[in-house]
Image (cartoon, rainbow, N blue to C red; front, side):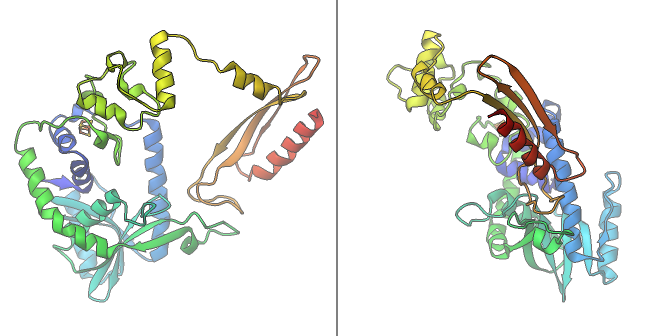
Amino acid sequence: MHLSKSQYIRGRQCLKSLWLYKNRPELRTVSDDAQASLFNTGISIGELARDLFSSGVEITFNPDDFNGMIEKTKELMDNDTKVIYEATFREDGIFAMADILVRNGEAWDMYEVKGSTSARDDKGIVKNHYLQDASIQWYALAKCIRLNKAYIVHIDNSYTRNGALEIEKLFAIDDITVEVKEELENIEEELANMEQVLSEDLPDIDIGKHCDNPYSCDFSSHCWKHIPKENSVFDISYAMGKQWTLYEQGITHIDDIPDDFTFGANATLQLKHHESQEIHIDKEEIEKFLDTIEYPINFFDFETFQNAIPRFDQQRPYAQMPFQYSLHILHEDGTLEHKEFLGDENSDPREPLIRQMLQDINNSL
Ligand code: SF4
């Protein structure tokens, strides 16, 4: 069996996804621009994080010569290289590339770089997909070299840029060695399971919450074909997981939901109006709100961008940065004015935007 790290993680999410990936890749839905842009962000963060461990040597990615990448890695290790970026290994059929490997005495420390702002969930537990990622990496690497520690390098969003970028403050480093060692106990079994599944016919695995957790599966358009395109139980807002109870009972269309099946207030309202096909307008609430509005009425629409790596002073990673607005001002006599702001992409748009916004809105009052 030959598996890359990402295929192993795919298999941990769903064995059917791994099987389809290996045997029916044409059924995948090709990633869209948004995913490509996320991927690109990841690359630039990964490259920047290398500055935490300077003077490293990079193994250049070459999809036509993985063996050359593996050989080059061995050569650098034999030559007493202290830091290697994208060190490449293939052991026991597992192909893995470590973002950053740092020599630590006779052993090596492994650093995986992530663009997120934490390696852990709200309860302080290492995120499962990060753990699987680091663990399979450790599993493959430990067959060739002695490993000391496993770390996740992630963005520290408490950092505020002030002058030159301070790499040590931009990134936080989380030691997950203990968790990785615990997870290693499961890997042999998981790999054996994957090998078994891949040697057989398509596994009979139904859709479920795992289709979106931790990643949106790219085989959804294939596996979810039996779900109605419109008015399915998965179109109910605020269903709070009850759509899966219905699905398990073989109910996929809203019209087939039994009368005695109960939902919360929002979902019940949606279903009631789906049945009557009447549009729901809460005129009383709308009137209450409209009564609070006085002329001139400002209709303010704005756009923001986010940078993982702050570009300007007083900017934090992933801060929402307003750069454009459109303001329509309706006066009591019916006159409609329009004002707008568009930042200059090479400078911080926040202060000029706020100054002009205050002027535009105040002048209309
Ligand atoms: S869509 Fe769901 S069931 Fe199908 S392969 Fe993906 S995760 Fe598995």
